[in-house]
Length: 95
Image (cartoon, rainbow, N blue to C red; front, top):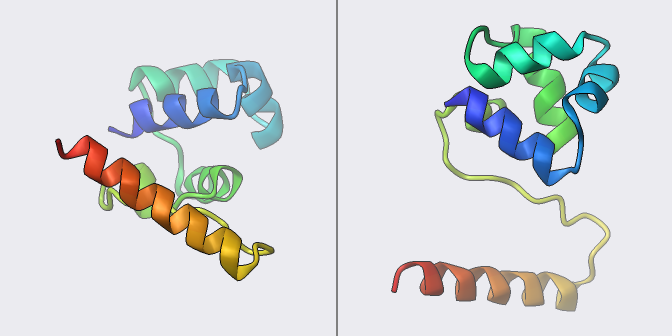
């Protein structure tokens, strides 16, 4: 559900509802309404949220369960380490 994803992503960035509202130029009560499921962000805010949290709009809408990670600026060895760590966590979660 989009409400849960917005809250989880906001908290993962250590942002309060007020902080997120300021970044988006809206009221805290609007963010609260999204997180409580009383309303949903408009298309424009979905795009802003996806850019802010580096996730796709499909992910926010629950159409795609994959998240993306910006690895630009990492060298080949750093990318290899991240890949191996990701595979390790996947195996651990399927035990």
